[in-house]
Length: 418
Ligand SMILES: [Zn+2]
Image (cartoon, rainbow, N blue to C red; front, side):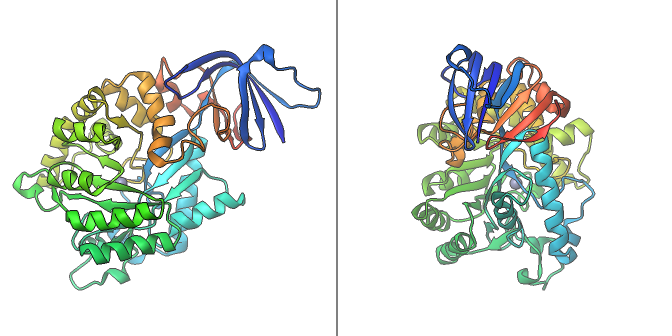
């Protein structure tokens, strides 16, 4: 199956030659075979041609931090879900959320915590071609300590066993349990391992930012299992010693990172690790004026919101590689709203070219799939957007689905608004 796109303007997603004009993009068997000056192509009569002379062609976007089972509806009651929502119900919701990602131009997501292996099942159905949705990299459960960030028993009355809860977390204390939990995720088909390096819940009341959650030894054991099996490790972390331990343990991507010091950022840059700032939850709260009721949480959220733009600006200035993740599924953060995250990265003074790379080639590298997707380049999957306007000038264009005229996944037009 061959296809040729006649492109007026191409945003490649790459730092070298970020923009190309009047290009032909030849697609064969789902891959970009060649990209070159339009004059270099002499299309055969029967070769289908997509006319994008008046459009921008750019890579499909990547959301590197989602929770596909959660909707982002602020009224969604996680206590109720953990205790009583049927797995089929949650699964159907997840399929709907995944669908919305593609409709908004996101062709790859990395899910960092789902219950009942729903992310893995959904990934497999989409890969089979029977289900419409983005490419998914799935973590299965996020590994957490007893009482940790992803221990769902905090939503239940005392005495409720973890096994009775429909939870996105796998509780593991100590290196042996950590290894076992990591191996269990891999056994069930996880593409990566998600851990929780720092914990804010219990220190907020005293005005603290976060405490270490897992010990260095546990994180090192998990990273060893993951890396031995070719998986990357993503860590929920905000700052402090837990981040230092996560760096030393070998964690690959650092999620959120509200309170990262220059010293920690320098280490991320030197060691080639990635920051995924997920500005969306706090930015949405601020935009909508949704103020947390609990005083400690309000204080913490204010502190985090005040710090996060400066942290991203310092990270960029110090050479840290930044990738886009929305934390979709958290209150007010809907699946598919990656452009909102991109707009806020730009508000943190990230140059537009860096924002585009964060959502394409840098995100792909952070996920270890830079040889699969994330750029308009020969040899990569033809995951492409046809956009009305120039998102390099105005990122907000991507926030308007009507401006995303078509989405191609592996060379197939799966969304068409032309
Ligand atoms: Zn998250």
